Length: 324
Image (cartoon, rainbow, N blue to C red; front, side, top):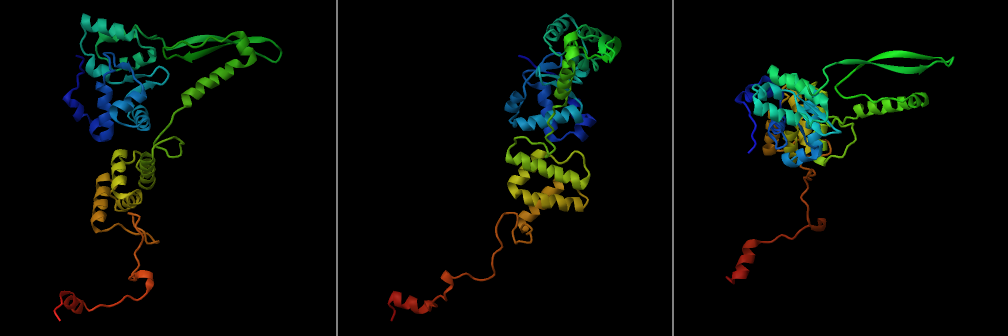
């Protein structure tokens, strides 16, 4: 049976305690212990599989991946090979070597397609023996020279030497025909476009297909960030629960009230909503409250607005019981 080591100090890490939300911690534990993990800290997994095993939507997994890549900076993910690398894996899991460990690492490192991920994990490895093994699987040189012909107006050709940063993967060799026809520019533009394709699900301006609850929660989180100045926003899971219980309009009003009171926390917002649930939700100018119930008229409605008959119930009772 395969198992993974998780130190109790995980819960004492300042980054875990102060910067991560409950959803972040749950997602990080999954990345460290899911069935696809390997001894190298690099493994193949699709976002659909993550969503299925975590019980999230694919859009939520995309948002969490973006948060861990760009905000926490704890992982890297290759969308083409579907390989993920954990930054601190070597720090906690690759402290000791030995022949069985080295043999296992050698086998699994040979299966990695994106060699740049090996370099990424190797940065946190303290063991010199294991670090040297990782270095064998990626190119440690950082630069190389390439000669590219360039056309001049007078039809003379020059050679210019370009120094390129390498990430361990081989660059595409361009033929003379491609350079003359301008195909090299098209190919380089395609590479740039692929790198720029990134969907940020914390921004409601991005057009993407999400379910209604996620869309409303993201919108409220962005509203909170815009009025509070907080760059992280509110916990999306807590917002979805609040929306289900109290309606989105009331959650928005509670956010506004919490920020105005200089207590912009989800706990304070939930307290406001619970008080409103007991005492009644605030109403807008049209007379509607958050439960979507219209304002009741003070006039006592009657059937077709005709005056109703009045009865002497005491006399009716005597007649029915035949007391007379």
